[in-house]
Amino acid sequence: AVCLIYFRSDYIQSDVDASSSSESEEYAKANVRGFTDKVRFDYKRAFSIDTSKWTFESEGSCKNTKAGPPSEGDNNDTNSYPDILPKRAFSDQLRFVFVMGLEGTGHHMWLPIWTDCQNKSNCDCAPQIEDFTFGADQMRSGMFGAFTGKREVEQYVERVISQLPSKLAEDQKARGSDQSVTYLLNTLCVKHKHYWSVGAMSYPNFMNGCRSWSNPDVRLMAEVFESLGIDFRVMVVVRDALDVLLSTTVHRHFGRFEPTGHTYASIVNSAMVDSQLARLDPTFFKCLEYEKFPAVPEGMGSFLNVDHSDWTFADTLPKFYHNVARAKGAITQHDKALNKLNNLPNRKKSYEDLNQALKRLRKICGLDQ
Image 1 (cartoon, rainbow, N blue to C red):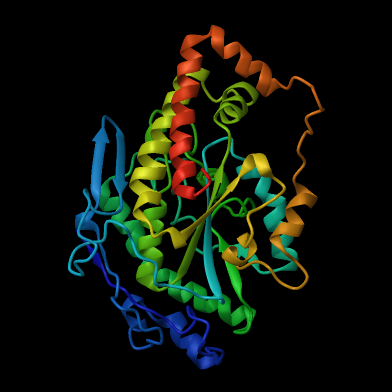
Image 2: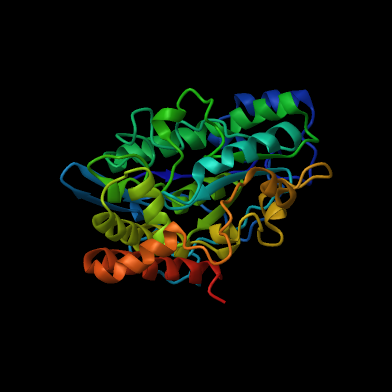
């Protein structure tokens, strides 16, 4: 196991100026332990990653490393590894954002929106994204690879923690210290040289023999960023169960309806809820409902730190989101498929399994009111 030590940098927090070129050059040369003398945000307890507490599973060639302890710990015991990771890093200057959702929840829809933000506001492609994703071979390696052993995952995590601060310092120097930035870890960087090998990072990501294992891990990301003192946020997109299955199995032919529904239900329950979101302080994530687009929850732009005088998230989404309006009284494909399920018991059970799982996701998101 490896213990990765928590540290902070002046660039990470917004209340101290780190604009001098000498400081930026110093940061660019520093390694992970070189930042410990730049403390300016008094956490109650420093957070250190301890991968010996993580769980590792394998089945055949499929492998999975999950961040966090194997069972619930005593969150009042400061010596225990937290079952629910507290959020202590907050900054109006620097944020990393991950868009979380099942396949079929519109990952590719975000590209023009984030590109517009990149041109007019403060969005950008995250540095070192190839290490933070699935490697360069479609899920066979990388931090979240379905064929990656625990030691390999540890090596990717070590590399990010040791190299990301200097890359951020270099980027800050190029931007200027007074400019805030929100880095997107997925759904923006399609021009990145590794994009087509890391994908949109949906749940699951890519087609392979380990579909149920091919998932990102926002708990792992949160641990990494908290250990660096970097503000990390998750935007969770939730969509109707039948619309997800129609989008993936009917429109794009990603497998058959029946097994896909069961697979997605398992992913929502085991990966998205139990292993990840349920083990994060709720301030890490904010959820929105696909069915309500282009309307978005109040404060989403502030949560992402992308709203500025000339560009806001709420005003921009309607310009790029094109929903096929349901004519009043018309029977849509969704309604037709829903009616057919009564005569297809296997499909109906698959749909119901996913629907129940998504109810759990909505509940943890606070969307079940």
